[in-house]
Figure 1 (spheres, rainbow, N blue to C red):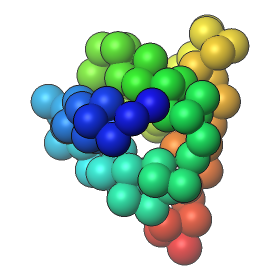
Figure 2 (cartoon, rainbow, N blue to C red):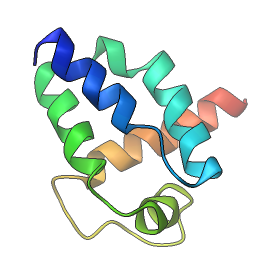
Figure 3 (tube, rainbow, N blue to C red):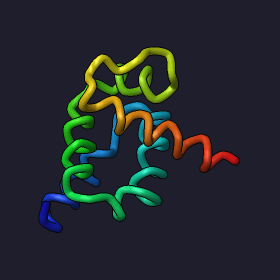
Length: 85
């Protein structure tokens, strides 16, 4: 993934729900830059989820049924907990 595509992904991380926006902002700042291109793509694909579904997955209210996206959601959730510690 080239730098222009990465900037687009970062921009798409901005969400309509503030709670989701804040969670993704921390992940984008702290973790995303160090990920391999395949993980950038998985993150970009995750951004296609609706804000409400994404919020439920990130808050643990629901499990992501997609085995491709679930590891990224788990990684973001794990970062939330380390960020708050």
